[in-house]
Length: 484
Image: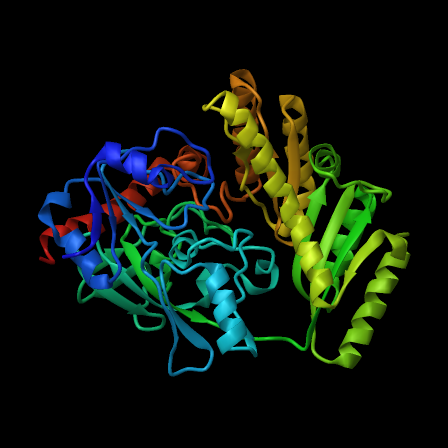
């Protein structure tokens, strides 16, 4: 067995300190062992080794997550960084990808090998690993039209805690009234929830009474096993994509959002950058914004032909006129450079937040940003936003708001500068999560709960529901004794 292995906390800290942190800036990571399997057989061998069966195992991907899920607090770390490879399958619109590949490498593969197709999930962080995006059921701007990662996974290879290599194909195993009898996994009973989970949800295990077995693993944050390979479903590219950033005031924003959502246009994304985020960018970057209003609505619309393009531009033009928005206050179009500019502009905000909070944490390593990932049904977003804004303002901590306006899912990022502000930011974050749940929403719509947000699950689920989820997870760990 030539698998790369280090069994010393000091050596890991010295040679691979990156394994002990992720984008969450959560401190205190430590482990006694780190392994880097290159093949499924090496990973199987690791999990089958009896000495690990009582040890906590943390799965580490590209560590782009912001909830601390990849940070070990003791035990062993299994890094998927060396699980590499992408290939075609017998089906034109499906590719097979190892867990350590990144979204960037999938996009590049499609560009070179599948030029007529694209992979719809588009989380902001394109250096995220495929295994990581599946284990958190990640989503991005395009999930307005295409949903989260879940919909685009047709097959998984998973190594169970026992070391058993399990292959699951979508459609092969379905729960009936929350029960399933599987020849390897045995009898599985899903938790019975008091109410259905929100449409966009990454908090807790995914539970639907008649769901596909594959969906139990997607979004399970590594609790049920190690994803080592996945078949990804691709989509045929549209004729063209029109993207616009529209600078406006708050009243115009809500009206324009409603107009677009109620239109027949094929919206791929509907994003927002919300007051006071432009002022924050002007302060911490070299950008300046001379537009009236301090809200930005960003949309991308798919078009199917030249005629459709003309009609789409005409409809957009009418919406702008009806809302009193000048053409001069819009930016974008349908060529690649304009789309790239808008994407970079949208990503500039979280990037700047991370840069600023990193400078604060250098002075005090307890400091990290508090980011909300709560969401509500789209029709309740304006109501939720007003509640959210009040808690943020009352905290007295610097904040920005941005995110997925079409899905009821705005992120708040709070940037505390000291311990006192950190407490206030944490309180505001918790109140915002509570407000979302009160409106039948979720505490986490796309990032998962990891270590930092696990405590929020109790706001959303009863203790009985959480106990049932824990029992289900434990049943997978207990297979250690039956699958040797």
